[in-house]
Image (spheres, rainbow, N blue to C red):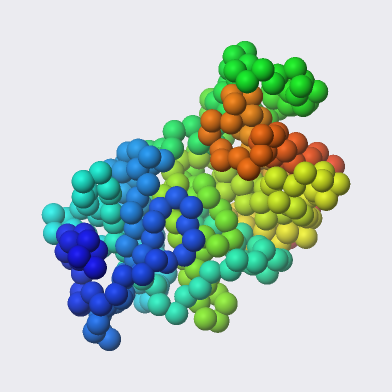
Length: 362
């Protein structure tokens, strides 16, 4: 407790700390629940920020401060009273910052949201609720006055990811290019189409929005009655295309298999999850979406398995230097699985377009 008490003493907490225990199973940050002794005092969430991934902690925290402040203001204007459960609340330090540095470690504290839970299971209900939640999140931030920065530069930039693959092919560091030439040819055949978001943005047609950029079903909190409370895990909130939040959710949620499934016959794109998520998303986001964004939602569903295939394959060609692997060909298995998902998405493109058209016509 001595270490925790020293870190927590930097923050303006209410009540007396009685216990600090690990919370959740996050893969990036180390997270702990801080329990206070007094019934009237709130509990807290303490996090050690992974500054190896988020190298600009000040930029990261600035984005979260702007986003949570704006959402709180929008909720207040809408007459919401349960604010501390509808938006994350950062706890300041005695110096007025929202994080502190202790040696080589960075820490932050947020109020714990009581009587709230997350879904782990992806089904039609949770997918529809995720669509509503993330669409509403984008809608509330559509008029954010501050200019946010990228917490991970070029995170969802397809042109950048394609250049990385081309560089890996040119270097052929692990001598593997010849063995994957058929897959490389398939990816190259689609490369111009898959990089169209960046081209549309340069042409002034496609705007960047404030997006969550990590739209997993367990990144939103639910109330006891099953209604959505708020979106959480805001580290990746940054300017991006709406395709980031839409396509990345479907890449994982609508896949019938794991992203490293070796049996490609088990991989397909779940249209029931697509329909549920899309219905929820357009219900809450259509108020600000432009026609170019809506008509390219099927492209977003294809973009993210394509992008992840490119990333896995580039790492395989580079000698497996980025992603952790469990076998020598693990990244290649992953790349082939993502390509199989992409092919399934492509087979459903016309059906997706028709469904979105019907929703927008209603």
